[in-house]
Image 1: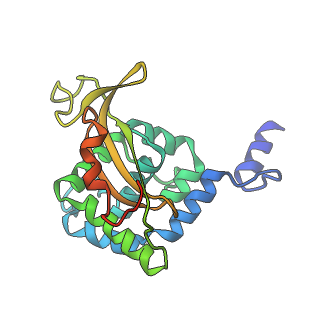
Image 2: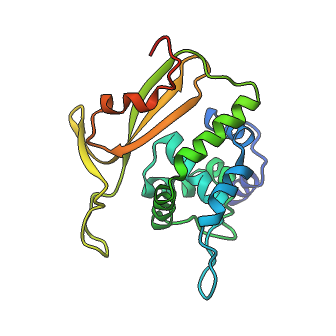
Length: 220
């Protein structure tokens, strides 16, 4: 009876299933984020995949994976594993494991470097903020500033035999981390992100404070 039970669950007959907070959050983001305009920003510099070989993963799918990394603080290998593990995340990205594999960590890393090389991160954030403002979400007079560490592989067992030179290590509590740091400015009322800056993990947070304030705060 067990195989039959598994088939019924996979087919949607999950009688006692409830929507998780993650699922509700991703459903909201799917509606709020202006995916079309963001893809239009990326498309001119995105590889076309001309010639032989496997065609590249679509830019919207890679952007959605990049967003998952930011929202859930996932490294490149961690987001690959999470997509294999989480049906909710696969649904958000648009991956059907019956038809295709999850993009591997190397593909995810190359996409992030593509955004960095063309300075698309600030443009994407500005486009999202403009879209939210048009939907009557306005930035208030308070900003919360925080930073989060984005882990990167520390191993030198790769083609180049070295760590990524843009990544550095830092100590948080009693643990050492290797990677980058995302410095984030958040509206204190609506909890909307209005500014982001990325640095190596060893840069102290106060150095980025001027870049994270929008200039109209009465409190921070």
